[in-house]
Image 1 (cartoon, rainbow, N blue to C red):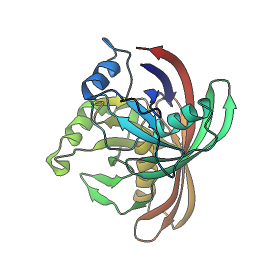
Image 2: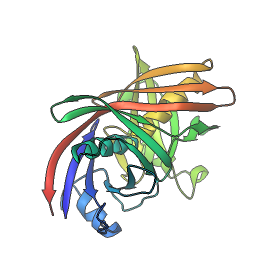
Image 3: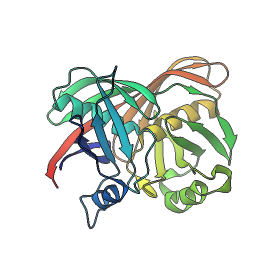
Image 4: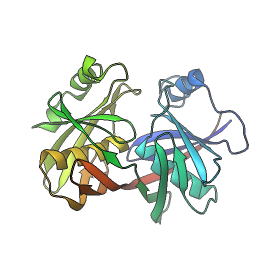
Length: 259
């Protein structure tokens, strides 16, 4: 099996081209591949396949082998991968519906990718924060002193809170610093903090807007992940509806791996 490693703002993935119909790795193989000590190491596995009416499909698996959800940074990486495979347009289907990507720039192995995300209709104020689905489930919690926040233990406690059972939730801690919304995320499936989470960054931008009681219209939020800067653009409408949501940030090729 040939795998290609990409990273999007530090979220790293193993990608495979399965358009020829070959089977992808099963749950146990995903766990083995993503293991950072006994495997290759990654925050997930992504399969690029065929889908009628689309340029390709995207199937994402967490390091624990679970799937069935969207991954925003993975979506940007799969667009960069498709570009490297010679695919000319980037309208694809993922578990949460259709997406469209655009490559804004290419600098060596790093590409700036703008990815259209799903519309978000509705949210819930719960557990001291804002809960919503941006392709997967996220809880956004405002904090003071984000660098000192115990993301692992506080995030894990909320991730397994009975309020979110049985599926659980990802947990994002947010704080404004200057012109950027700083975000740290505990990701379920990874079961720890990652350098970035795409759907979580989207949820954080929308959650910050809700908490600030922003006015309807077009907005763009600069977001600082652990190392990289990204942006989230959206149009808000009354009733907690967000349309035209897009996530923009880097995606970079790392390595070709023969397993």
